[in-house]
Image (cartoon, rainbow, N blue to C red; front, side, top):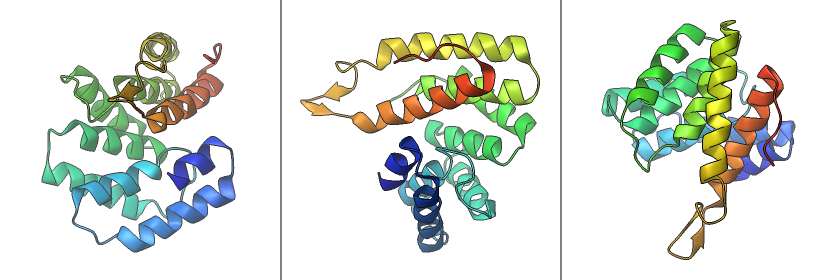
Length: 178
C-alpha cells in the first residue's frame, strides 16, 4: 500500500525506496502472493528500482508456477513494459486481453498497459483506440459502487487505475477521466 500511495502522490524517492526494500526482502521468495505483490508494486510507476532483473525474475517465476493465471500474465506484461521489452509485453498483454476475465486482474489495467505498449511501438492508431476502450471501461468500473464489496471499499484498484490512466493519457494524449 505504501508504494501505491507514494506513486499516486508523486513521491518518487519514497516510491523507489519502498520498492527497493521490498525487492531486497522478498527477492528469494517462492510464495506466489509475495512475488506478485512485490513485482506489481514495482511496475506502478516508472523507475521503481535501478536493477529490474530481480523483478523480471519474480514475474517469470509467477508464470512458471502458474502459466495461465491472469495476475501472473498481467504482472509479466507490466514488467516487460517497464523494462522496455515492448514486443514481448505486447504479446503477453494481448494474450491476457483475449483470456477470460476473473477477479484477480483488471481488464482496464490491461487495456491501459496495452495502450502504452502500442504507443511505445509507434502503433499510434492502436494506442489511441485501446486507450479509448480503457477509459470507457474505467468509467464503468471506477465508480464507488463498483469498488465496494460486502460493505468494504476497495480503493487500491481505483488508485492503480487512476495511476495508469494518467500515465497512458500523458503518453498518448487524451482527456483525463476524473
